[in-house]
Length: 125
Image (tube, rainbow, N blue to C red; front, side, top):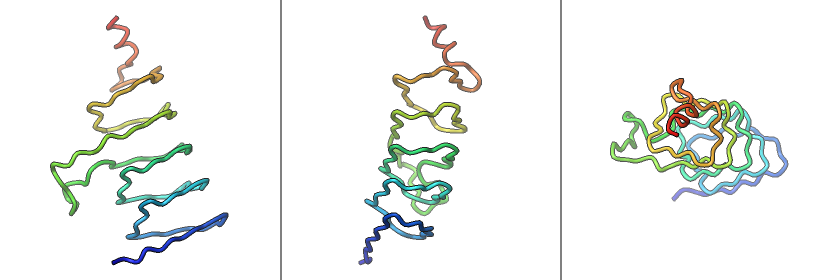
């Protein structure tokens, strides 16, 4: 069985390089994580609250690609929830948005493939 170590850092400035580690059930509170890089990670059930994400880039998010050893062609991505987020001027490029629901959202200026959504909705009235 693997040894589980518990590390507590309080008011310390450290740079952490981690490879092949398990951070399940870890908590980060009042931390500056700007300019971090997370690759090949399982972030299922992650909760990010009260965070500033300006300039963040999310790429290749979803299930394992076909060339990955854990690839399962029948696996389904569980839904994500974005709540009370300021995503203005953000871009979604080459994303699978099937079944996406927008509720009580400010859609002023929202376009899909260059088409202004407010004009489409106005045409339905």
